[in-house]
Amino acid sequence: MRQSLFLITALCIMLGCQQRTLSPEDAVTQYYNGFASGDYNEVKSVIDDSITLVAGDYVMPFSKESYYEQFKWDSIFQPKYELVSIEKQNDDIIATTTLSTIKHKFLKNDPMSCSYKISFKEGAISRIQELNCPDADWKTWAQRRDSLLSWINQNHPELDGFINDLTMRGAQNYLKAIDLYTTRKNTLQNKPL
Image (cartoon, rainbow, N blue to C red; front, top):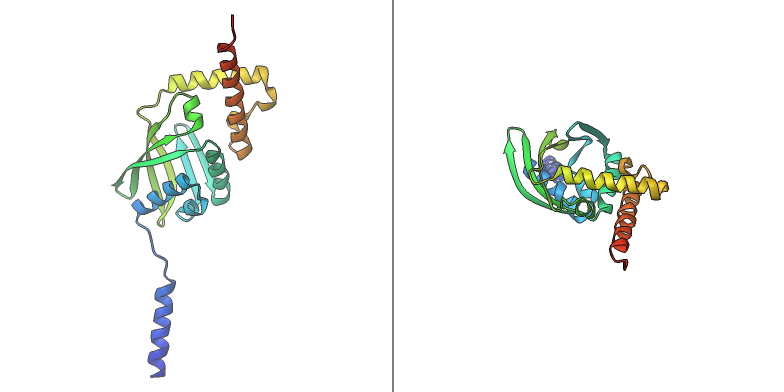
């Protein structure tokens, strides 16, 4: 009788301690929900100890800790994520999202829809590769970015480098640069002749 009670108790403890494994679709949904709600713990719980982001020629590896910096950078632009579709493709997920941010508005690409190939390692997101952004106007994006950079370099050199600074401070400087640039432009347009 004692052995039976011990076995039942041990079995209950073992079953209670097992973690629920999310499906890849659920992990991707939770990942984007975490970004949408500003909850890094939700994001952190579904990514691998190392995660790599790939956009064109840019390959950016992160640890969970360094990815938090990317998360904070992203949050400064007040993103609004919408997960449009999820499709399983072999062991990967193809996710299509729509993203609206202050930065995208300034760059005249808001909202922006993109598809991503999301790969997994032992059930956790390990790689996110941008596949395409069909409605992106990269020419306008580049013109707006270059115009901003040129004006900031001439008028506010203390902000120089914000475009490559992927920290929270870099994002804050990016927003400050956008604000200074648009305020100046609006002031010039409203000046009486």
